[in-house]
Length: 76
Image (cartoon, rainbow, N blue to C red; front, side, top):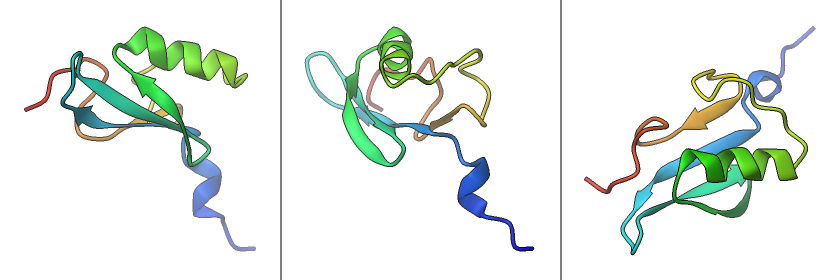
């Protein structure tokens, strides 16, 4: 039996901070861009809208943070 590496991948991916007014991060769910977020609450709202329960934003099985964690919201 072969394991599917995608099976354990989180459904939510938050990409690096983009410059803007305000700065934002693109959010993907199941590999599809669903919008942008300017704070962690936006990520939680997107997840809830998609019917995905997120109990811990630090759980790598729940959310993949690219280019910084949940507290990174300013461009470097």
